Length: 65
Image (cartoon, rainbow, N blue to C red; front, side, top):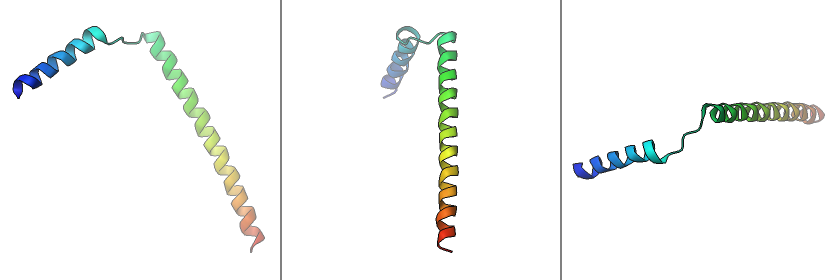
């Protein structure tokens, strides 16, 4: 059992060091900026939707009171 765990660890190390293509700093920064931008846009869309639904519910409740 311990031999298979050791083999797994060795193979994982070899794969991470020799087979995985790591992004460059520029690629990583570009991806981070894109994720941040998309997150801000989605947050703004949800905020606007929340405001609209809040106003609509106030209008509907004021009609029935």
